[in-house]
Length: 376
Image (cartoon, rainbow, N blue to C red; front, side):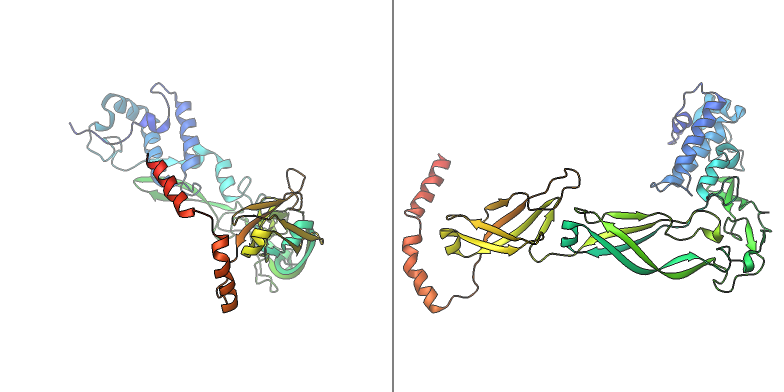
């Protein structure tokens, strides 16, 4: 006997072998909602959906289920489905099983109409300075946005006059039969004639060419809270694309915040990080550096004598506002040795005279001793 490599149908649906008809239907309903090809974005969703359909088509038929319980996938008949296909595939009315709410959620209609339809969201990017992030700011932007056509109230019909769609009889959806692999299924789709609105224009509106939308210059005013993170999206409700044919809610507008690069600061949460290149003499003797800061006051950086390249200095509470903590972050200064690309003859001579006095005593001997100690 040739063993089938198919999964057990009860395992596919996640039910016990004594599952009732209601248990099977509920299991199929849940899995079909999850893996329906028109809804799921998971990899392999279509194959899983076919597997679920096949399992339910067999187990929901009492005669086929009894035969499957007796023979498994190797039942008599020789069909690609182990003897349970009947030679003509399975015919499942998915809308009857899944319910109209499933298709309404997919195609945006309550009871087949477009009352729940919604326009698409719009995203724009807006760039601000680190100074704006430090203190917060009020912004004003002008741009063209789609708005409902005034001439037809967004319906796309001249004078707002519409008529019932002849293809869907005003339902906004049409039923069609399609082949999914070996299965024939009845599916409900958004009506392509009226785009799910249930109404069509008696005569197209001229100003908007029947689209129900026109582009209009719009002024947007919004606030950037202090401490806002890069990539934050500010939401303006009902400022997005109008709903198709004026039937439904307008989409939202999202403003994604981008922050300009600063000449010396980088951000790490509420902290500001900067690199400070200094000469060797400054590191040995110490120095003080003063820079302009985002708060309008000078940022004074005191570098102690004997500072090493790679050391960090912290200046407390001069960073950005913390969105969660409520306090301010710190300024963290990374000290680096500045190495000049060229040195003039006079400086070279001075360095050569200082070399012996600046070099660590017995440095090579100490390195050799440390290496010997590690080996032993």
